Image 1 (tube, helix red, strand yellow):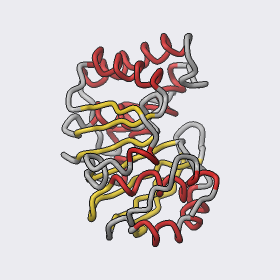
Image 2: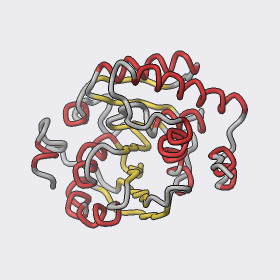
Image 3: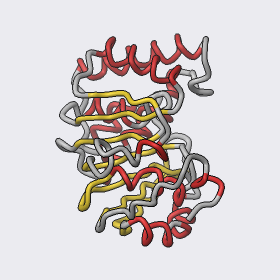
Length: 235
């Protein structure tokens, strides 16, 4: 039997209404349409997009409760994981950050076509935006997927998170190794490891890791360092 991602989500306690399923259908159509004029994803087959983008983004909801939090997605790209999370958990208030205006143009059309509310797009680099007073330590939750290795992601993301808030990183097979590499960055940035969940993606058996970090202290003002430095010289 072919993999049914909707049923698989239900087995994990995430139920999508017909309206939500239609929103995912519209999202898929727009992704394919825009992908012909700009590089959004190498994955285009419908069943692959449903598994490796939609379902994969929502696996974060298996291990972390998405309720009425104010969420920031660092390096939103084509909208993963934040757009699937917003569709599944419409009460989320979302801010999507990306450094490329073209991608934000795509996301703006997704937001309008799907009728998503309580979602804002911001153009810029995390290293710069993390120092903006209206964004710094203003979020209950940060998420990131396929952006950078974990120590680098921590420097991009934790400055946005309030004390007692969380950062949820969606990682692949190296997730556990990356988490161990991030210990020094966690200490410097005010974070504490909450949990690491490893599992296999259905059908593919591809390894996935969800890393949940809690912010326990304010991030020192010097972080994030200037654009390019976190990636070149990780903490």
